[in-house]
Image (cartoon, rainbow, N blue to C red):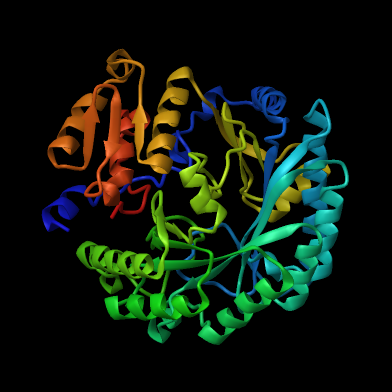
Length: 453
């Protein structure tokens, strides 16, 4: 890849799991009242065979992984489990009271933290209570994030029993020096055992998360990790760039600095090699930094034009309403976003007082909704279109920014259609930024986002 393009476009930028992105939410026009109204509106539109999604944040970890930018609580005390799960169920009751009828649930995702910090018995308790007053739709998709070191056969059996069929294991990298730097000592044998047990129990989709651009990571380490991954052939792979954001409070990125990270050019070489090896194995590249075997639902969704992206990443189908439960969870009604408080104690106190634990949010304007759809199209399908140029002419500066990228060969425009080229695929975040009026009109004075390349 041309180094001049990397140097030009390797700038801080969002990953666009939403638009507007969280730093640009307008909390001044947000209230619990209008958030609830947007939830009701979306529920009525989506409580059909499509169903709704639930994201459940389980924040506890027994040790700190220093590459992680997630909201988590480090503890080895497991007496925190039941009080937290009961608070989650109380929050769910608060949403059930808003819904005008019994919800139809299509997707549930357990994220963390480390979901398998919780005992199998407690996870089963959570799910059975959660689903007691809902209808689970046909072809539902229940998934969780697994830590290979502590996901036991009992965890897998308990979750499979309550409807889970997909798991994503955090692999990151098999190199010992890298694992030491990120405080994630995880032998290949652990991942192999977890993957094989998952399939033996009956899970239909096993994913591995692999990161490039980690501290002390070399191109040889990436090659080794991909070749080891080939032995297990997970159904889907998230192969994504390490997001170095040490300025975010509590993220734990310490023990190394930017001098220990690969350069932008080295990172891109790591990705290009990984992509080449994965495609040789038979994986298909999907959206941005995802790969799947042709038999996986994620790959099928691309062919059927159903690929969707939200705060949980890429999904094989769209649900309009996603309710986030737990500390720091983000909910999405399509017409608005909300985020829960980030402290465990404050969260538990609020829900026990029958208060939705939301501390900020954003209600989308008509312009937001238009831009959101374009960005979603680009992230999922690498193209978008509009009725006529008046739509884009009403969004100042977009055409000018796209023209420069077109001249650089990153995209092609024809009449009212924009399509990202193969050359432009590494810069999909930059192309989306051309549409991001809130970012363009109020560029940050301090670092908010990770680098785009």
